[in-house]
Length: 328
Ligand SMILES: *[C@@H]1O[C@H](CO)[C@@H](O)[C@H](O)[C@H]1NC(C)=O
Ligand SMILES: *[C@@H]1O[C@H](CO)[C@@H](O)[C@H](O)[C@H]1NC(C)=O
Ligand SMILES: *[C@@H]1O[C@H](CO)[C@@H](O)[C@H](O)[C@H]1NC(C)=O
Image (cartoon, rainbow, N blue to C red):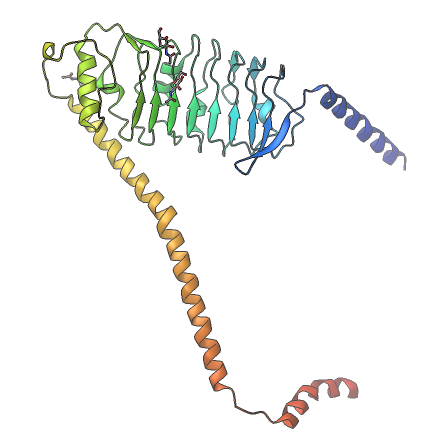
């Protein structure tokens, strides 16, 4: 009895402790966005990651707050997160494991962080497709992208615009990447090697890129490569007359990279075809076959049934066990 009282007291203390915290926490607006549970917490002067949102939330928009650091423990409650918007928080500290275990996370925006070290584990998240890393000051984007090779997240859209990048990262083979925004950077180096592993790239955004190259023909060469891979217009503004550069064959290691990437891309396409078309098709076929089978079985049973019954016989058969029970 006494322990029960203590327990009740303890629970009530814990609850009041919790609720006072949540009373002080700014409120987020919960709604449904594309069928997902979403919390709009943008521009609410959050100084730490909110801890009072329902834990099954799938989207959290925390843009324009004052969150400076983010740890694993801050996100531990929210294991169903699919998208997390943290732009314009001046994030300064992320830990190695901050985003670990967010296996459903497909979109992450940490634009506008200052001096933050991007943890390499981000590039190993199993579902991450969209990553905004624009307007970073003094960040390690290039280094981290190069040292985490191979990047295993299925990255489709990468934005590293206006991030004071002086050369683009050599990311290795990244066949999933379709959209790459490198706008607003001042590049001192540019080469085919920055693109040779990106065989799925379709949209390269290069607005306001300024170039200070020691070998200006590398820009022209890069454009030539990208055009040979299906780009209609030269993506980079080389400010150079074409006839100044000599048309040399592309580096064999770049060609090799592109081929390896294309093989991976083919595998991905086959797998997604299997998942999106063939599996559903096989399921539908199976259901149809099952229906046909059932139909014919019922029909056969129906045909095999005697066309008339002997009511007396049926009755005696039905009542037989009942009588036995009565007797015993
Ligand atoms: C590329 O980045 C710039 C700057 O962040 C942005 O204004 C622009 O809309 C982006 N372009 C695309 C196509 O996403
Ligand atoms: C590119 O630079 C020009 C001039 O500096 C500026 O007017 C324009 O807004 C910039 N574009 C973007 C997308 O920031
Ligand atoms: C080709 O690329 C590799 C690796 O980037 C480099 O080491 C080599 O010098 C390049 N060869 C030529 C001929 O440019």
